[in-house]
Amino acid sequence: MPLGPRRTAMSWKICFIGLVVAIPVVLGCRQQSFLTEPDYQDFRALACPPHLESDVNDQMTPLAGTTPSPTTVDDTQRATRYLSLREAIAIALENGTTGVLNPLGAGSATDLLGGLAGKAVQSADAIRVLALDPAISANDIEISLVKFDTQWTTSLTWNRTESPLGISPTSFTQTGGVTSVAVDGVNFSTGLVKPLPTGGVAGITFGIVSQRNTPASRINPAIQPDIQFSFEQPLLQGFGEAINQLRDTHPGSSLLPFPVGGQVEGILITRIRLDQQRAEFERNLNYLLLNVEAAYWNLFGAYYQLYSREEGIRYAYEYWRLTKLLFDNGRANVQTLEQIRLQYEQFRSQRLTALAQVLESERQLRGLLGLKAEDGSRLVPADSPTLTPLKPDWHLALNEALAQRPELLLARQDLKFRELDLIRVRNNLLPDLRFIASDQLHSVGSRLDGGESPNNALHNLVSDPFNN
Image 1: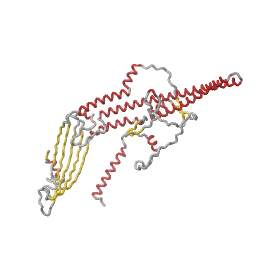
Image 2: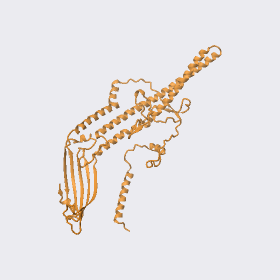
Image 3: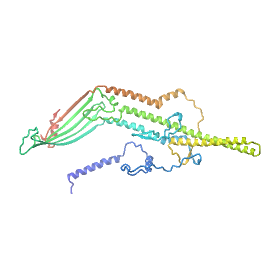
Image 4: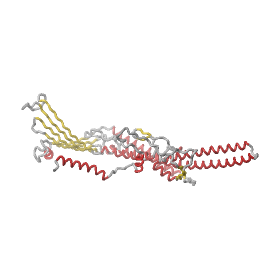
């Protein structure tokens, strides 16, 4: 049984939709993905509710996991994990935190939790979060270019108007029992509008206005197709490519009833913001490296301090033991024995303090590396500090600081932004003077087919149109 025309058209539509859906699947996503495979597996392991996006009653419960309790000075028996400075830096660059942004307190991690304020994460110092800031600024550049994209607008409206002959100002007379005049109108319009980099707008619009009268008029239905070419260009305010790269919105025109853009700043400004975000990320990265290296050597020093306290307590105990033998034999008095014991107890207290400092230094280093607070092992530095003296060149260090300090780069970029913003503000003081040109070709007919028939409205539009 052959398919009908409607079923055939529907089959072609289904094939077209399937082709449109299949092409992106075959070609794949070409946008850069910031979610790596290990991150995806970690998020899957969180066991999120399966219908969280549609069921508001599902709640996410944080999982405690299998993290052991933190180590104290009373229980320090853990497996040893030797860590080199190079490995520590590599771990920090992958999953670390910047820590306290103060050179005077280098080596300290921050214990503040990042909170949400609007769409931004506040107080977050994770390097993986900060690395997304330049990507967000780069996306703003793409958003700022949207105002120059071509817009396609299409509309189709239908209306019917019925008026009694007694009150309608028409030329029809009441004949054949007709007591009213009905007008059926169809208005179709489609067009392309291109905002130009110079601030102007160019557009082409094709429209069809159809009107059917009851009773019938001389041309019924009256079909009027038209093609309109429009161009509009500001001459003072908003004129030129330079100023339109600074403005956040396009100057607009009668073809663009709504302002285009405005979500972000102008193109040149967003590029400056990208440079600032890169400098800010570089500044945070410098703090991360400074804090990781300082925390590494702080842990190294804490272990040496613990070693010295343990050696001191051994000598103090041996001194007390020998004095006790003398006291038992009557060769030492009790005051001397108690003074030596007091010194021994002081070394014990200093050893506990040094052990607590080792645990605290390890906690700070773990926080900067993004490691768990406790994983059953203790970190032990495997490298030794370099003892070779370094004599820096003052002039070379000064020139490098002036050229590469992120704070100075941020200040220079902010000065450039102020200069460009002054140009934009001065341009807004100019009058809004525009040049507008329009050419409309239109015709009339009673049908859209029929070849070269005089009643073919489209043929009349091509062969002998009217011109406005």
